[in-house]
Amino acid sequence: MNGKITIKIIALTIWGLLLFSPFLFQDVRQIEVAARIAVFIVLVASYDLLIGYTGIVSFAHTMFFGFGAYGVAIAMKQGDSTWGYWIVGVLAGVLVSAIVAVLIGLLSLRVKAIFFAMITLAAASVALVLASQLSSFTGGEDGITYSVQSIFKPATKLLTDDEGKVLRIMDVRMNGKIAAYYFVFISCAVLFWAMLRIVASPLGTVLQAIRENEARAEGIGYRVVAYRTAVFVIAATAAALAGAVYATWLKYTGPDTTLSFAIMIDILLMVVIGGMGTMWGAVIGATLMVMAQYYLRDLMEVAANATEALPLLPDLLSPDRWLLWLGIIFILLVYFFPAGIAGTIIQRRAAK
Image (tube, rainbow, N blue to C red; front, side):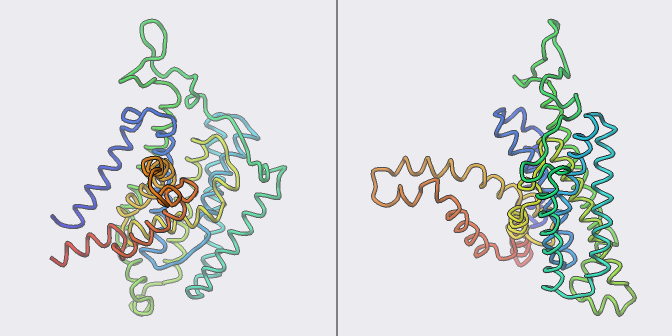
């Protein structure tokens, strides 16, 4: 089977599982994992537009994610939990992200590689400091807790039975929680589809040409800085929208949930695991990384209990050492899949 088809089947299977997650996995934690995977697929795919398709290394992607989340949080906190204020918050987050992206793009994309990366890192650090210190506006280190639209509240009855109680389908309550999940899923699916269309368009071809040989692309008439700025704005907008969706799901926004540099590291790892330069790889990378973050400790606890009669192993498999094993797993993935899971499978199938 063609490698690209194989990867698409895997990615579409993941999307299918996400679609039916509330009915397949009814635990609250499992639904939280599914929602986080959907959001991070969009976040990783938008970052791959930069690093994978255009060759731009940026450390400011979480800044745009945070702008979108804080836009919704501040609007809902200062106003009320209606769709009007939500839309205002989303538009504000997207507008701020686009303006900052244009400024960074026009001022900095003429510089090369590590210098541009350092500029984006400085910008992200400034945003994190401001979010932490402007406590009267952003909630500071404590963040912002707010109410969301009534349709997303667990007490809301979407469907009722003959007795007026919340209808259950396959033992799943048709209340606001299910509405919130499918809001996240549909929003993320649409954003991911939009990015697929972008990379399949003539713009995507130009971006790949710039990545492969910037001087040659400029030599045949393409305004490289304009294209690089444009894709930077597109990626920032997608990240801001993902942040707005995530803020609606969490009903809380703080520096650690949206602006933390640890999230930027997670995004980089997801891109590398899935494979740079392939949107479908973002689905695989985000899924594996989020699953590891939530369930690796549990698996290690089971393994430690199963080997408690053996010397040394229980200590090595202690859940407290989950980051050590996550690092080992990442090293093995990079060793056996040097172009990421999607990229390596595509290359190996093409070579046969």
